[in-house]
Amino acid sequence: MPAPAVPLPLPQPEAQRRAPARRTQRLPPAADAAKRALALEAHRRLCAEYGCPIGYFQALDPLDELVSSLLSHRTKNRDSARAFAALRSAFPGWAAVRDAPVAAVERAIAGVTWPEAKAPALQRTLRAITEQRGGLDLSHLAALPDAEAAAWLAALPGVGPKTAAAVLSFSALRRRALPVDSHHHRVAARLGLIPQGLAVGPAHAVLATLLPGDWDAQHFYDHHQVLMRHGQRRCFFRNPACGDCVLRDLCPEGHARLGAAAPA
Ligand code: SF4
View 1 (tube, rainbow, N blue to C red):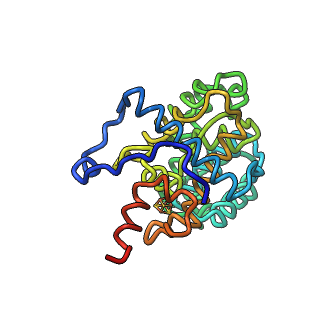
View 2: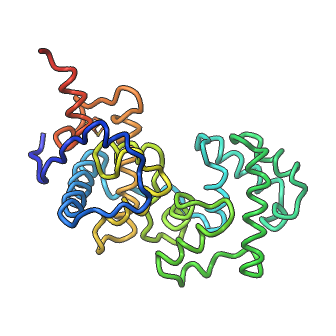
């Protein structure tokens, strides 16, 4: 077990843990510095555990990645990949998906969760891009700064911070953006990187500000990947494997769980 390189965050009192989260909580500078150090140390250890740099799993065009991300919400990767392939084979292009009867789109994506909601939502997003860009093309994102590109995407109907970050990070754009899925979010909350109760959406901005300013896109991608993998392989929703976790000396939740399990 490596020695802790950052001050251990103190476990929060229960009343504070249950308090409703504020969307724009500003930390005092010292607490901010401690959380930045904690994020960096967690990254270092998890990268050693899971092997960084981690290879990108695909390099889709940004519009393809946007459609893929919209389909993937609360859906297994295998099922959303099948639905994406089915859409591409059923229609000659995204303009045809946009203009098709909604029932035809819904049929093509029947394998994802909530196809009846995702089909009209996807068409709304495609129509909004067409109105704003004069066509279905996201190539302008390459010329925008990271934050502006994320804000442009997140202003589209049906697109939140996670989808915006996924498009920027996972697509061929390869930008500095931090998607936060439910596994990543759970590990971050248990470590104390975000306040207990802060939802996934607003957690994106809080977690991104903890990362070093000189990190490149690969570092951001690695950070997301290692926290997500840790949530999938150790920090389970129920019964996290704290005794087998390289972060346990940094983690208030791990301390509480291991302490409670220790013999009297
Ligand atoms: S110590 Fe436990 S709760 Fe904390 S990150 Fe590790 S597995 Fe999760």
